[in-house]
Image 1 (cartoon, protein in one colour):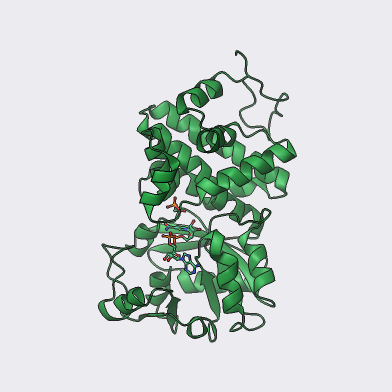
Image 2: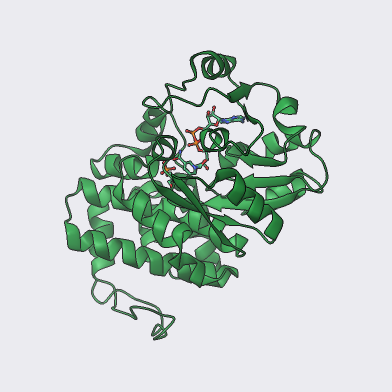
Length: 332
Ligand SMILES: NC(=O)C1=CN([C@@H]2O[C@H](COP(=O)(O)OP(=O)(O)OC[C@H]3O[C@@H](n4cnc5c(N)ncnc54)[C@H](O)[C@@H]3O)[C@@H](O)[C@H]2O)C=CC1
Ligand SMILES: O=C(CO)COP(=O)(O)O
């Protein structure tokens, strides 16, 4: 996203904060970030810094892409350099603990006086930086924040659509990681094209069911942040969550997969938080419960698949034909 903004002649300065001084030097001198974007030359005017003050103090728009686990602490450190009315947008697709915290809520409490938004959509970082034609969604209650984000990022290779359902957009970005892991697993098991289509579509049904019960607008899930991001992360090995699923499908342990990935796959933690919350609220989420059993209860992938396929059959689109009660297994 920083490279997209830096390429925009209407943006005065783009400053990217990074903890690691070596990466900062690499971006400022060689104009590359070989670990993350090995195939991309970064814009010459993209400036990196280890100083939060330099990145935040004079910014009109601050975009935060920190893994959910560390999101609050970085925002709290940065808050002393913010000013009232400054636009802060989360790019993070996860849920933080303790409790069940969303990034927009963390921004609002960690950075007092800021105006918040969420950017989410089918945006694999390598393709965004390579300027592959891409679209995203900016969600905010502030029309001004939405317009500033569209002006900052909109260009020949990148389109920014808007939505006012902040909660729906950020929930979609977090939830799809669960289903990307499942899709990766299905790919490793060579389940076939029909299974892929069933999986993606039933994932969407499950995500929207959860979202509606949590107070988001299920129609948001028909847009880029919902269907769009679900399709891309359920189909591409460029997604870390998909790769985690693929390795699980090859019977690797979660611990070794996560340690060898070297990057964040938010879906592992999100599965636990969402499955626990869904059970508390009595929301039926068979796919998420199945993945939870594989990740956290040592249940085999084959057993979960058998139980999913033997459940009672129910409504296709539950917003048209209401579901007929709980989907109990039709056979043991
Ligand atoms: N990579 C992608 O294609 C996309 C990622 N996202 C989201 O962006 C968020 C971040 O993901 P990535 O950057 O891809 O993850 P990553 O795992 O590739 O990188 C995270 C970066 O954050 C840094 N970091 C970790 N803890 C930190 C801390 N306490 N303080 C400062 N920096 C810290 C790491 O050093 C690393 O550079 C995730 O929530 C992800 O879902 C969203 C869309 C696309
Ligand atoms: O969210 C993403 C693309 O939209 C990136 O997904 P991963 O975090 O699984 O790599």
